[in-house]
Image 1 (cartoon, each protein chain N blue to C red):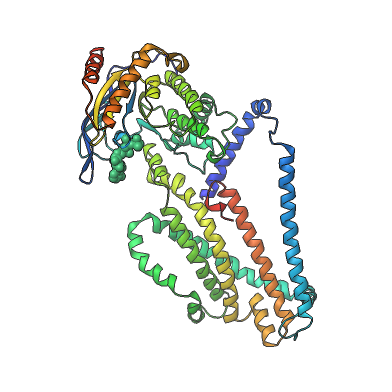
Image 2 (tube, rainbow over the protein chains, first blue to last red):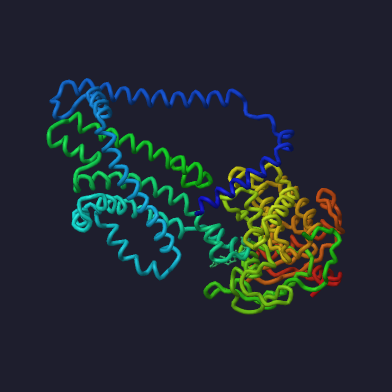
Length: 295
Length: 283
Ligand SMILES: Nc1ncnc2c1ncn2[C@@H]1O[C@H](COP(=O)(O)OP(=O)(O)OP(=O)(O)O)[C@@H](O)[C@H]1O
Ligand SMILES: [Mg+2]
């Protein structure tokens, strides 16, 4: 909700900026940066990507050479995985599994996110809630969630519901703790600014507390995505072996190592995509924060 | 918007502190402080570090309770922060997640002004403090001087009766500070309000103020009160060489200097005080 608010705020700002543009065009049309400064920065960026690509290529080559000379049950070379990837893409197995996994992931992650933010805000807002839930949170936080998975299966069955609940639980804790931390570590000076302008409680939350918690929530999102992916695979191992985790499990049982690697590579790609999108969220909503400078 | 330059300066008292006492633990930080601000006047408070200037300002802003005495703002007893007062903070107090525009608009928005009024006043004050062209930037993207311009605009925008400023220009360089002085005086001429201005700089106090209160430390007390005998409008580069300026500066300086060494003001200081009080200063 505050995301919408700050978006609107940004739009107001932009509207004003465009109104001011004619004046700006006179005074500040020229970029004072020397051209060679920009040039050297560009070549540095090129160098970074070159090094990165080189490292990946070296890794793949080494894997290829080594993979061709060991037992195919233990390890297969990248080319074999790529071939298998193509096959499974064509016969629809991969996309079906991905679809099943993503369905549970999206519902579970969304539910965990909403629950975590909501409860985190309430926790930070009301001292009574703080006193009441501290022991529960400490107990659950120190319990490895994986230990609860069989219990979830018992309660929710072997289907989608159990998967969703497991993923939601894995997502919930990092979001809850980060939201709480963000909403309760607001700069006191800024709270005083709000007080001097006569903010109501609700206005203080809307203008100060929630915006200042957003970088924390986004940082929690990063952690939570990793947890959610873990939860997704574990859920698939324990329930009726559908999705990407199902393929891993079945291929391992039948020693089809190349087939086992395909969902693993898919998971890596999924991780890269989701982490990338949280980074984009950060640069959109938390550009101002020093938290988001930790790369 | 109150924009006429010739607002009748009310002679009533905007702020009256009588016997204000504030303790942190056993230590009295403010000890029976009496201080008045005439309506529409500019008063500076100066004193050694730790003498309780910020504490006094926070008390008047309604941000801190007191352990004794009374604070009246326009004859009303103070109960918490009031919309009659606006505060300009030393470290600007801008919201880092809001553009300068939205920071300036903040007070108007939370005080329930209509959308049209918010826009009109925000635009007006952005122009007034010279932020035009930068209003869409975020605080971290602009200089400290520019951030404090936004801080000033935010405070003036809500048409406060009393403006409280705690060393607002302490963190900017000398040149920027001079231009901010001129800017502040210009805005204040057009939007008269009573000002309490906390500073460490004697020059700054004289350039800006009608009255100057000098405090002593341990415990914080009012040591002396001066009236600045310089006509307005003032131009800093001109008045700093005037005899009235230099003699007042010397007077305040020696007062602070003696207190810093732990001594009491010398006989000459007391004589100076007496003569100054005779020049028409209010009790
Ligand atoms: N919350 C607090 N708890 C305990 N002591 C405090 C608190 N706030 C201020 N003090 C003490 O009160 C005294 C006065 O502080 P204050 O900040 O008002 O001084 P100041 O005159 O504004 O100083 P400076 O010129 O350095 O800003 C100091 O000795 C300080 O240590
Ligand atoms: Mg201070």
